[in-house]
Length: 336
Length: 242
Image (cartoon, rainbow over all chains, first blue to last red; front, side):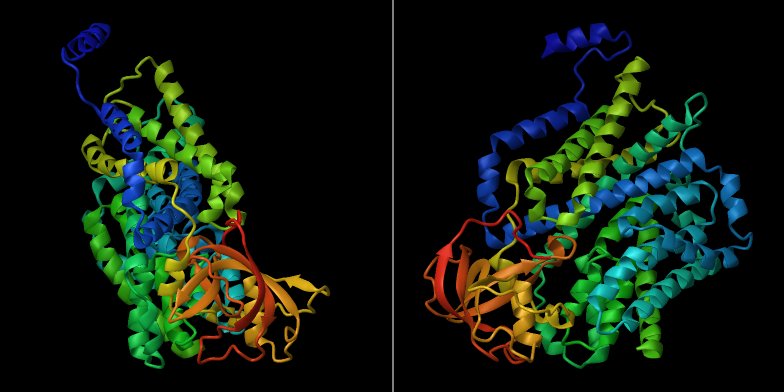
């Protein structure tokens, strides 16, 4: 050990004289241990519930990664190729007016919620008002064409659900934006979220693009996995069989479906198919499920805590939850 | 976490995505159409990491402490967020070491609305002719539950699924997904007649006839099926219907 340390330190003039344990060594250690105890690990997980949980966990991660990658690529592209002045020119100067514009602009991001978090953070870094970026964050996963088509396929008996979902989600996003204009405080958002990346003097735009995308991916990836862990645990260990007994109780149904949307953390492209399955419930609670899901769920809370800080997530997520339920109910009562 | 470690994690995670894509194991976790996206995502992760590694080597500071340009300016916060980056190792280990199996009977027995998802599906056309018609569970359940004309009555069909048992009944079951395994919903058919005495979770092909009008609201639209013959088969490459 000391010999290796001496060799390394002699190579690096300024290096410390002893071998420092860095994350690199820790990583190698973990990998070696995991390989050595592989069969033990497999045996340990050979319980039906744990097997199901691990499959669901991998499924959520695998399913979400492409959309996270899409999000960080867009985010990197904004950092490298879209000057802050261009964004300012594009949006109305009054924040209250820019909020609905951002909501409708969500139509253009064809992905689920994992893609919109890095994009929203990048928009803030580029000087877009937080209220506007947050509206985009909430609207994009729910109102884009892919999600609407999936909803139409799932609810082909009741096409009004597509309209209701679009209106309910857009309303949620805009109300949250306006609430932020009125009550939001900048200090809730972690400094690191708004810190511009270091000056890229001398490096090409493509380097900025790749470095920004890589940085965002490493930053958000861990939180996505954390969200996947929570969702897989809830999905496997919270029994849903008793949902059948809710029957016609609309108020209870709304509350239960709202919480279910949070803990199941389904991709917004798939949640309509799950909502169809709760056929014992009336349409209203199922609409609430579709409006709450893309706006707030455990995976999204983890991603938001990572991107904007815990102080932000613990205020924003509960507020969104309440607003989404109200908007879902109002839309449902009017349209359904 | 150091930049090099982050890059290695990215390469590992991208590699895990490519591994399940090319080995076909991705079908245990997500729906078929996601394949191009998975390959693209895995490749992009690896390319981004390699780009950073090559750039570091070129700049002659492979052992950059917190000095690289993407980290400068907010070292403190970075050390905070870097702890979560370790979690990216979990899916890597899960894929390479454990390789979790496709969902099975556990999900079927703990799910809420058996067979109800199919209510709104409308794909009824004419059945193909032939002695034994292979049908997907989705189509079989839809036809028995929602087709008043009884197109299936008297026809001999073949179903593929795995066995599960509950309350003294034997079912052949299959899961359908629309995006990933997290949204799996079960399809069940109750077996009567020559019920195979194979263990739970064994994949089988059963041939036989539907018991007319056996699916109703009371039994959650689970039809009964009179088995005439059955064979055990290996788990299909595509374990879920979509």
